[in-house]
Amino acid sequence: MGTKRKRKTEGRHAALNMAEQGLLSLRQRAALVLRLSVPGILAQVSEIAMEYIDAAMVGSLGADCTAAIGLTASTTWLIGGILLGAAAGINVQIAQEVGAGRNERARRVLHTGCLSCLILSLVLALICLVLTKRLPYLLGGSGEVARLSSVYFGILAAGLPIQMAFYFHNGALQSAGSMAQAGALSALACVLDIVFNALLIFPTREIIGVEVPGAGLGLVGAALGTVLSQLVSAVLAILAVHAGSPVLSVHRGERGFFDAGILKRQVQIGGPVALEQVILCGAQVVTTRLASPLGTVPLAANSLAVTAEAVCYMPGYGIASAATTLVGQAFGAGRRDLVRSFSWMTVFLGMALMTLTGGAMYVLCPYVFSFLTPDPAVQSLGARVLRIELLAEPLFAASIVAAGALRGVGDTLVPAVMTFVSMWGVRISLSLILTPRLGLWGIWIAMCLELMFRGTIFLIRLHRSLRKMA
Image (cartoon, rainbow, N blue to C red):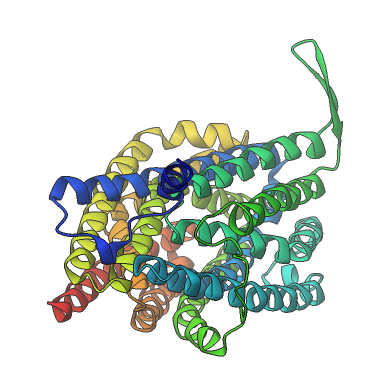
């Protein structure tokens, strides 16, 4: 009876041991894709909903606060991308070991990654804290916007080790097949962020006849709310991995958790992933720098348009997480047939869903911007430039999910180079040419064309990589 219960528990927490599976029918493969994709998509839905409410809360404080967050947002994403790359270098290995049924090896990978990721996050936090006061001015900010941005960024920088702990452990749950649990933790982090923001941003006030307490900290409260939500979620993720996971939790008698070979492999896989994120976010930093001189309204519109667009690509990133897990486990088990099948199934699913969300946003974006900000000028400009980029959503989806599938087999270096060529050779070059002539419109036209180009070359790369496995 105990053994049966244990097997049922493991079934809830881990994906299939691909090495032990026979032929899987199309229905079985589709069920696996949906089983892992739906929680990832729901987690993204929760996260984007949080970003919308977050933006609306900050937007109610005025255009200066919205612009202050937008000023360093690309830098925040850049740092987060480095953390995600380090986590991916470990989590891809976990997925491959779990897929091959080597759970003890997967635990060794996990514990090696815990140490390396902690050290990296501490170093990055220190660097960011040193740069906090000067960064907004280097990005073209000035006056009150730069001052507010510096304070906001400094608080987030201090919380980087907490953010890393959450990224790493939640990714480990996904890699072991526990997508539902990882999705629930992501959703919880978003809910907590909204709750903490509501308590910390606004002063004590009366809502529908009920007095709601508040600290009245404004933009500082928004930053503290984010860090506190990540802290609670990180603690729960750590407990879920190290104490609750049948696959990854510590087993009595196991030793030698640090392995230099695993660390080397982490750098080989995660280094290009981090580089790709640096390339993406570095280009965003340049884009922000181009938008900054255009004025407060264009800068705020650009920031909110990026936030609004997130609802369109959330299915892509949710499915990309599932693609990395499924393809990684199939690759670790030596199941090249499943690698090919899972890769294309997830890519086509991502393209279909992002086409639908992009179409819906094209119709609804004026209403979305009216929710995000009370400023009519920001609403109008943001909606108009966003509609340009929405034309690229199908191919944007292809680049997102194909990158996730390629990551599962450890193919990260060439995609990073492709991203560099696309972002800096196409987007930044076009932005430099178009922005002086068209203003914010030029930035978003360049973005649309670049996303179409990037999706095309990622589909070609995926096709060639899978063909080599035939």
